[in-house]
Length: 379
Image (tube, rainbow, N blue to C red; front, side):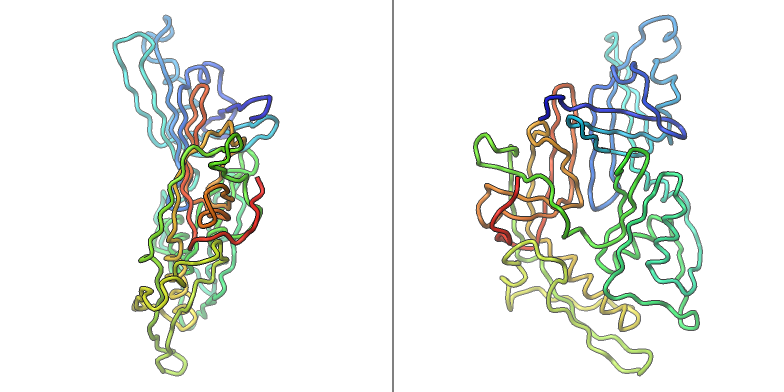
């Protein structure tokens, strides 16, 4: 923990979020934020409210303001010393009031989701002629520039560019649902990452992150150097699967075999459960309607890659000892858990719980097997 401590900043507003009045900060009792690579991220703000004077005769003061209304934008930042991190950039979707008889003990609970919820408000019926999934994703993301959307779109290994004489991609879904539908074809994910600066967001459409600079290491069982309070690791040897089948090539009108042999994701573990299973590995058929050979190969590989994260870990840490945000959808190193479970992991989910004098982070990790691929994990 920095000598300057951990500071939480709350900004809100109907159009451009601005720092909220001190009365709102003083009433804030608890903050919970969850980031996950599956589904939208969300937040919940728990306020303690009451009526302290004639101005509050008709309603609670916080309920009369313009900062905490439905569809207002909320930005939460956390500062560790002089380093500021964007914790959440979202939209208020639900407001719950809990009046009680004791003066000053009523509660106002504000719940919301990240700005991707605004991409899920309108079902569109739209054609995208002669456009690959990459161009469609970029076009859809550009519609939401008002939320400071920065696109990060990663091309898949197998990309089918449709010819208008053969097929025309059609969207009959919300923008969010269509982006996720396209991502699933390649075992990709789509989500919104708040930041890197306040009032900006990164729209990521691509594979789960398996490369890049890892975050500060999670340390357990190393005395005063430990920053993790608990860690529970589980391995599901029945999860990995290979895909095989046939698809009819429209050009030659012949059945072409389609089969996968391994995951193409960057390995995080030295001994994947897929290899440990050997001849006992689960095999699944290629789903019907896979389309062209290129699309069928991409679909088969996507199904194989999606089953590989068969080793999972769950734990909890104290953020003041960790000294930073543990970011979901990124890499982190684990040390002190033994060779089988040390090394690099993918962070699937993190729940941040902030109260007065306390900041806890609950996390879920995943990778494809056991054993470390690195001799040293840097703290």
